[in-house]
Image 1 (cartoon, rainbow, N blue to C red):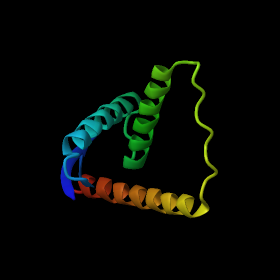
Image 2 (image 1 turned 120 degrees about the vertical axis):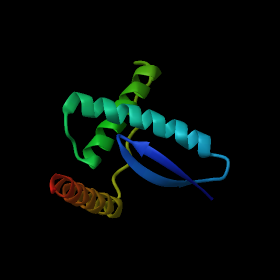
Image 3 (image 1 turned 60 degrees about the vertical axis):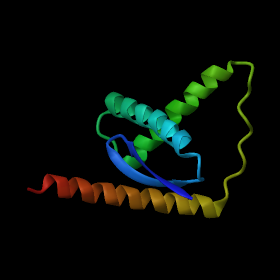
Length: 108
C-alpha cells in the first residue's frame, strides 16, 4: 500500500492507495483541488466539509454535461442508515475541527 501527500484547497492530506496508483491519485486530487478552489472563490469562506461537498457537486455537474442529455442519471440506491449515521457523525466532527482550527488561527 502506498501513501500519497495531497493538498486540497490549502489543506494537506495523506491518502493511501494501491502501489502504482500514486500518479492517478495525484491527478484526481488536482481536479478536486481545482474545483474546491473554484467553490471557495465563488462562495467565500466555507467549512472543509462544505468546500469538499461543493467541489464534488461541480465535478458531478461536469460529468453530467459531458454525458449529454440522452444519458439519464443512474437510479440512486436507497441510503444505508448506518452509512448515513457515520457520514453525519464525520461531517459533525469535521465541522468541529474546522471551527477549532479557525479559533486557533484567530488567537494571537
